[in-house]
Figure: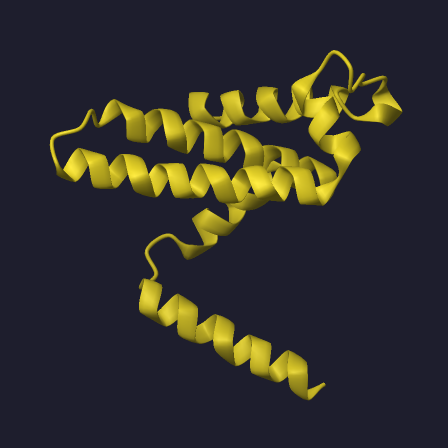
Amino acid sequence: MTSALPSQDTLMRLAATIETRKEIHGGDPQSSYVARLLHKGPDAFLKKIGEEATEVVMAAKDADHGGDTHKIVCEVADLWFHSLIALAHYKLSPSAVIAELERREGMSGIDEKAMRKVKEREAEGL
C-alpha cells in the first residue's frame, strides 16, 4: 500500500481535527472557532466560504497590479479550511474531493462539464 501524498496527509489531519470539534465529539463552541461555526449551522460556514472565495478573487486582482502573490495562497488556505468544515458537516471527507479530482484528471474540462450536464438531464428525466 502506498502512503498518501503529504498534501493529502495534511488535509486528512485537518479533517480529523475538525471532526473532533463537532458537538457529538465534545466540541465546545465557547472555546473553538470550528465548533462555533458548526454549532451555528450551515449559514455560518457557508457565509465564510463565500467571504473567503471573494477574498481569493480580491487577492488575485491585487496581484495583477503588483500586490503580494503570497496573499493568494493565504486566502486559498482559508477557503480550503472553511470548505473542510462544510465537508465535515455533510459527512464527507477530503478523500472524496481528491477522488473526484483524480476522476477528472486528464479529461478536458469542457468535456467533463458537458458530461455532467447530460447526467443531470438524465436524472431529471427519471
